Amino acid sequence: MSNSRRLNSAMLTAGCLMALLLFSSGCRERGGVKIGDPAPVISERDIHGSDVEMSRFKGKVVLLCFWADSCCGESLKQLETFYRRNRPRGLELLAIDRGDSRDAIQSYANRNGITFIMLADEQGRSASRYGVFGLPTMYIIDGSGIVREKILGAVPLEKLQKLVDRRFKARQEAEAEYEKIHSR
Image 1 (spheres, rainbow, N blue to C red):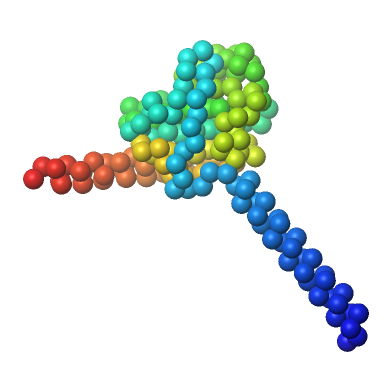
Image 2 (image 1 turned 45 degrees about the horizontal axis):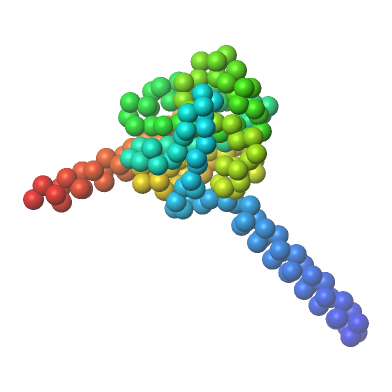
């Protein structure tokens, strides 16, 4: 092989490696919050004008759902029954709409009998904190504020139930261990 061919081949290989490195580092940044990370702070007003802060859900399992009516409205309606079934167990559900106005979201909630907390993320601050780039994106956050699951795209309710049940079970086991240690 001639020197010029070797040089071209080496340059092509180096270029491919550099492109791969740039692409993969970009994906990591866009990936946002990862499992095991503390949940980024959310401090917004819900569609009724009440302040909502993640700290108020300490000790509860939180299902955080980023969505938009244009793509996820039908699947979000299904979460109402899921929420009502799991709320007595300690589940909180926050649906954060990326892009629609507070009035549009309130109208959606009224039309569909939604009782869980709904927030308007019109400027995308919350979605940016979580690194959300596709909708729907859901996070399951434990009672200590740690992200335990990240779900990209729509998920069957049966699977979502299993993931949430895992958090409830972990909480029960931790409480039982605490009692065991402190009852001595």
